[in-house]
Image 1: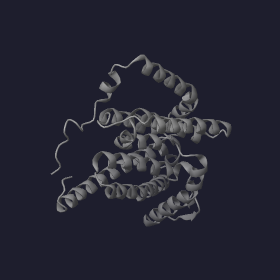
Image 2 (image 1 turned 90 degrees about the vertical axis):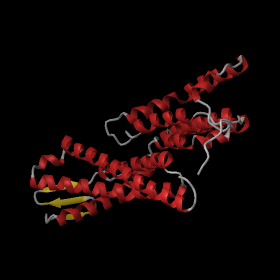
Image 3 (image 1 turned 180 degrees about the vertical axis):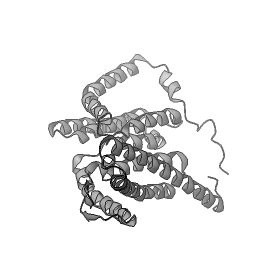
Image 4 (image 1 turned 180 degrees about the horizontal axis):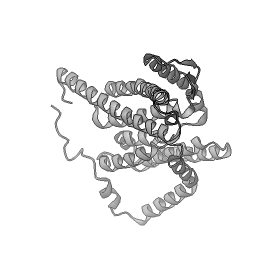
Length: 303
């Protein structure tokens, strides 16, 4: 059995830590830091929020990850042994400012947005030290995952995922005895031609599922191998569900109405399967949790 934490090692409530009385010599630098943070990072932060709220929905999962990360940080509180590390924090803050400047000069959004996360990381180290970083590893990870990947990476990953999804969808279509010819990301069925676009490649689902896997693993699993196993499951789940989406689109167009493969109806099918993939990964997480508890019990440890 694992003994409960003693009061000396329990984390302090975040609200209580913020409400502690502080001298003017501490308050003024903190206010100046907050003002500098707003000045430096307001533009990339607003562009990130606009992308989360954008019509494409490719980065909409950030709307979930960001508030969850804040809630987790608030829930976990400040580590009882947190010790400020001004030297390392200052070094990280300087690095964040330089990254912000370089990203602005190169007109590269990802670097500017990543600089926001690095600045938050540096502020935590400055005020609370490295123990707090380890204590807040999950919310900090979710925050960095909420930043959409740069275009150079998404373009590199999208094409093979498009082809993989097309091949899987075409195989399911043949299983239903529908004549089909697949060439790359183009699928031909009698009277219709389907294009597996970038939005249907599965990259969006994979990114969101990996973020969900990190969240589930951090909140409900206790060992690193179990968390890695859950993340590995996210990859085939995303590919499989996206193949099912392509199959359902072709099935509805062939047997019901060609208009069901386009526009709002097509988007509704995509979002429904997106939720299904979340449920599947959550179920896998529950199974992994059960297996983890049994393994720990056999090893003489309590989960």
